Structures are given as C-alpha cells and as structure tokens.
Image 1 (cartoon, each protein chain N blue to C red):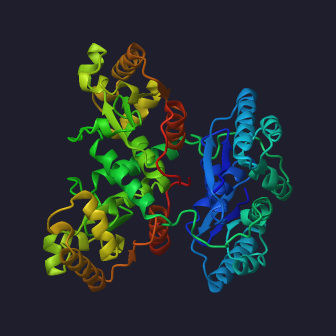
Image 2: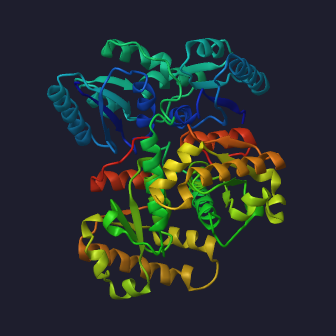
Image 3: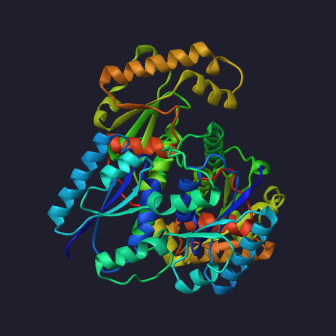
Length: 274
Length: 274
C-alpha cells in the first residue's frame, strides 16, 4: 500500500506538532504513513531545506505530504507554506481568535512551550525524578512522608515507569512499594505503609498480560508461571479491597493514561505543567 | 491582575490538549491564566459536568474561559460547545481538510493517540526505561553495546533525566557515564567507553547553573564550590574536544529540548512514536 509522508515541523523540539498530528492521523484507518520530524527549524535556510525535503517526499511517494507545523515566526511560516504539502498549522488557526479574545497581540516568541522559560520548573522535575529513583523498588531511602502518591503493586505491574512519568511530566513525587511474598501471602500491608494510607494507589493487570511482560525478563522459573501470576494478582486485589485502596487495571492503558488516571482519581495536583 | 481560566478537555489523558494549548497561551505575555485539565470526558454526563465547570469559572472570573478541546466523538463535542467558553478544537479545524485529502472518513475513535493501541510499543518503552535504570550512574550492568546513545558528563549535568525521557518518550536505549575524578584529572576516557565512541554524546552546563543545582542537593563541601565546578566542566569539555565527542550545553534547555537535540544531532532513530 502506498505510503504518504507526514512531516512534523517545529522551531523547537517538535513535541507539540507530533502530539497534535498523531491525534489526527490515527483517526484515518485506511492510510499508511511514514512519519518524519524536523525539529529546530529556526532559520530561513533551515526552512528552505525543509521545503525541499517535503517536495522530495511528495515526488517519491506520488502522494501529497501532510505538514503539521508549529512555527511561530511569520517569516519561517511563509517559507514553509511554499512547499507542495498540505499545511496544518496551529498558529495559523488558533492564534488569531485568541488575540481577538485577549485584546493583545501575540509575541511570536518560539520555544516558550517546552523551553526553559522557568528554571524552577526544571528543578522541580529533576527533584521529582530523583525522588522517584530513590524511592523505587528496593530503594533504600523511603521518604514516604514526602510523597504525593505511593504506587503499590506486584512486580512488573507498571509502577516504575509510571512513577518516572509522573515525575518528568508533572513534577509529582511518586514513590512505589512492590508487594513481596510476605505481603501477598498474608494479604496485609506493613504498618509504615498504612501510616500513609491516603497516598496509596494500586496497580493491577490482567494475568495473561503480566505473564507476557515477565517472560520477557525471565523466561524460566516460577516468576512467570500462570499459577504464580494469578496468585499474586488475586492477593494484590484482596489487599486493595481490604484497605479500601483505589486501584486501576493497567492492562489496556499506556503510561500516559495510567498517570492521568492516577492524578484524576487521587486529586493530586501536578507541580509543573508541561 | 484578573485571572482567566483555561480548560484542557479530552476524552483521554488531556496530553494533546495541554500541549497544544500551552504552545498557544504562552504567546500572550499580558495575560494571567489558571489552567484546569479535565481528562476522560467520555460520556454525555461528564461532558455536561464540564460545561457547568466552564460556565462557573467564567462567572467567577468575569472573563470568558478558553477551552482547548480534543474530543473525538461528535455528540460530546456538541455538548461541550454549548458552554460559554471560547472553543478551540483541533478536530473541528483539522479533521475535515485531512478527510478531503485522504478521501476517507475519520473513524472518530478516541484514545488512539496515547492509547495502548500497540502492546509492542508499551513493551519497548518499558524495556528502554529498564535499560536506562540499569545503566544509570553507578549501575552495575553496563550493556553499552546495546545502547543507542551513551551520555557523558559531570555529576548533575542532566544525564539521568535525559536518559529516562529518551526511554519513556522515544523508546531509545540511553545509558549514561558519569565523569569521575579520575577521568577529569587525566582528561581521558577508559578504553571500554572509547570502544563505543560513535555512541558517545556529551552534556555540559554553565558553572553558575551547575552550582545552583548541586547546592540543592548538597549545600556544603567541595562539590558545589565555584573552583570545583569550573574545574570539572573545563576538564569535561577538554575530554569532549579531545575525542571529538559532540556535546550540548544544557543550561537553557528543558529535558525535552536536550532529548530532541540529541536525536537530531546523532541521527539516532526513535523506536516508538508518542
């Protein structure tokens, strides 16, 4: 099936253009896309080079490329608009209605969205990441009283990547507590953890999915047997229900979704905005 | 100064709406915004509740709220559009031109952008995150031959959060190597690292900034003195230049920017797209 090239153009990282574009192109099931990100288009020379790449891709694919662009500077947008691609630009569409509403002209400054406009924001994200690392599975430091949220679950239920995402994206202090043999067999949690009960949030997952994930790591042994996996998950859910700990089934969720659901369910405030 | 409320509405996580909206509102310097994310608006009841929140905020602020929305389902968009806010919806603006271009109707399926449409994508991100954790500062495992990129720099130059972001966002296998006293004094790198030279990428940072960051962690001692910080950074840059290792000054960059610049400069391919 013919491939069409989709470009994400930005004078910065391209994260915004990619996020926007991806939301849109996934709505079309019958297309086959090649995705190309062109970040840091911040000079007229680079904009001209981007136009060349777009036109070359169009000629090769014999299909018009789609260009998701978040170029702030009008002179760069004007250059890029001369390409043969279909241009969809959030600044073209949305800046004018906002300017009218606010009664203010935009500053056309690039790099404000994901830039280091605020050193404090950077520091908060770094500190939250360090906190997640120090309070990860088997971490020695357990500053649970400093945590915004403490994720509880069996091995490979998604605790670590979720904690790191909460830290990097939202500056949230997320610790995690792995349920071990001891907790699982007694279906009970230790006192020092129960002292933080309002912060506890459980992760569970479908047994078949957990087996797949565990087998990637350790193909042999009890760790990924159907019996063991089912036992652990049953006991974990017993613990969540016993103590009234809210929990989410991560089976069909991405890391972003798990993180958003935790914030939504707990009401934990993000410390930074992306 | 009067505050205006900006809503980010989504039937999923809200990441797309936040990213888009943030890019736009940061273009207006004279406004004061309160930001509210309403994720998982996936029923008519929740859409109606969102309308109430928007109208309440408008009445309280005596300023019309701005609503960035990425609701896919037409019935939910119709409900939300009855609020008194200024509505900016990417699906309203961009879905139609794409449908025309592709000659195909959109599927109006929510949750495709950040959803678990692909278990393989999830696994890759998790595996990359585990790799970053195992190959972080002082990690025992050093699977440098498996790495896509190896970040080199002094303590607190941003290696760890950058590696984690590269893993979580792009599925890239990023290891890091902290420059210790020994390397810095001799301005040389060990053989096992030089064996991976094409993968090495350096991080540097302004001395004043590094001092600030280090003082947060350890306020006293040589670690954050001006002399020590200047010495370490000078030697690190000497190492980068000596071996021809590309490097970036992270002082004014966010984690997203550092990561994008590394991919852009090295040509390392992302293993997943967000």
